[in-house]
Length: 110
Length: 79
Image (tube, rainbow over all chains, first blue to last red; front, side, top):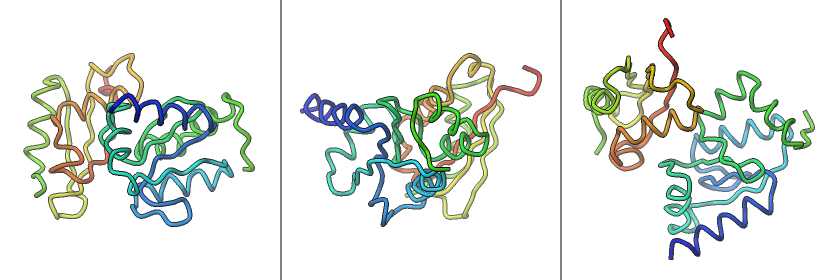
């Protein structure tokens, strides 16, 4: 069962440059931590695919197993797990997130 | 549910005996904490790996008994 879920997750992060597994949707985050990452990405003008784990309990657990990371949200850039809320905030404040996005050739309106 | 700060600190120190740990109770509800962990064993590790070490120390309580733990990892000052 897990392989089916892992394949599904892999497909999402392969098919979209920036993917945010979150609680709620980008337009209606349902958790403060998810909302913070949405705001960071919006501030940077970075388009991203939002995936609401609240709609699928198997996905909600599967994503945590996929990265051995116990919390949501989780941000992926070009198929790579970048971090959860704490790390994204730290990287944004230090400018590392902007540098990473540039390195990966992700256009940002900011 | 929830946990108390001492329990979190003990779990982290059990797994990372050389760490300096400070736990901050963000809301006083036993569910929202911040953990500042400095340890030489973080050397050469990415932030994700460092945070995974802290999560591993909590032995599955993260996201279960413990709803929110803001983590900040670093190397000790003298490192």
